[in-house]
Length: 119
Image (cartoon, rainbow, N blue to C red):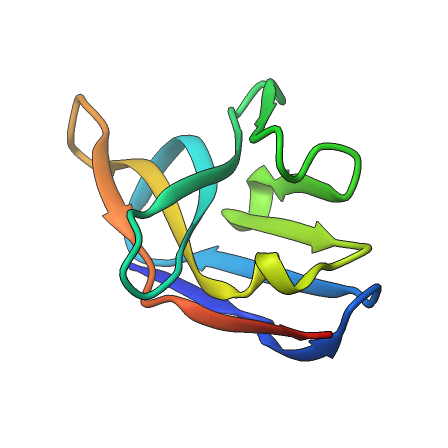
């Protein structure tokens, strides 16, 4: 399973660090990423990182957010700096996990963590 944490309330210009920890019988994790969703809107991709360290960022967060991961701990991080009110959303962790004894990856989602940026 995936456990996301680190959300909260912050003023515009502030920073938050989100953590996504995967647990269970895991053989490997290919891609890990963060998505966000505002009420009434579609879930949107924020950033992804592959096991080899290839990274993608949505244009809206480039230069402000940094995604990283610790493969040994099956954990991913999202450092969010220079936060804006429009970054307010529920942030969801996503991972493509190959369980022990399996030959392919399965898509897993965390429970979501609320990020609120006040102006």
